[in-house]
Length: 223
Image (cartoon, rainbow, N blue to C red; front, top):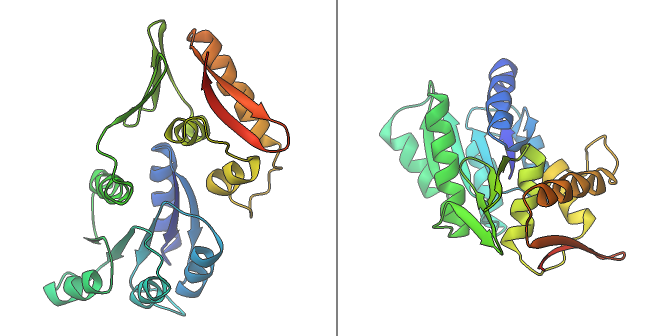
């Protein structure tokens, strides 16, 4: 799952990015509102965390601009403000949730999970296909032969595949959602991670395979 973090306090931004990455999110960090708006308009994110008090453009202005464009992306506002009127203003502007600084990392993660789950309509904590189960909370892929905890990007790729069974997902779509087009790595990293996942499926004796359609993408197929 890919998030945008807009927080102008760079030390806090680095700390939050580390927490989110350890929790298997891909994170793009920006430090002002104009940059946040540009990233949201040019990239595909599963959610955004916006500080309200930012230079160039405040978080509320970014939020209003995104909502005026019809973008339904889940957005969590961060702010040092704690007055009820400020919270109401943020929620009325279209925020999904509101978190006042200082906050516990566990609460931030719980609120992100809640708003992204609500947005996708997901009600289950796992995905199933064939003899495989992917636990979305523990990032564990299981079969009757055992279980393996997937690494960050492995999990994100397999979640996309299991969430769209039988549907082709292009390398470009994987790359955009997980690495981002501004990443310094090459797009062939997608094939590398597909190879990692195929080895794990073999280890688990899965009756599901990752198939490739030439010049089109990858999909899951039960065998």
